[in-house]
Amino acid sequence: GGYEQIHEVESDTSRTMIQTFKHLMPSMGSALDCGAGIGRISKHVLIPEFTQVDLLEPSTTQIDEARNFVPGIRNFYHKGLQEHVFDM
View 1 (cartoon, helix red, strand yellow):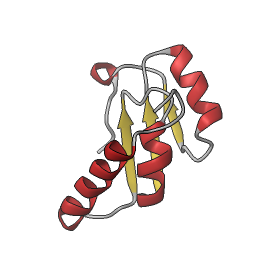
View 2 (view 1 turned 45 degrees about the vertical axis):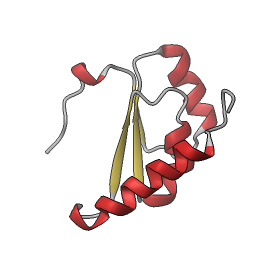
View 3 (view 1 turned 60 degrees about the vertical axis):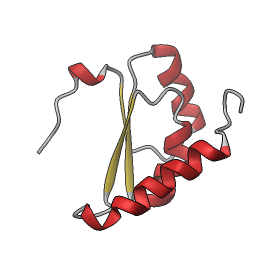
């Protein structure tokens, strides 16, 4: 691994899960990476699969790194999951 790398097993498992449940999703339009850290899953798994990806992370240090590491993110939410209000 490493700070900016994702272990192949982790990314393969995440992609397999998305493919398994893809038929249940109304669209592949958007995804929210919760507790995203610097955005490794967003960068390597979600952005290739979804049209738009948002990132949710409570740590200032992590979200600042994510802004540089994952330029394709639509919105960066600097808060914890328990504080996030989902739009319906």
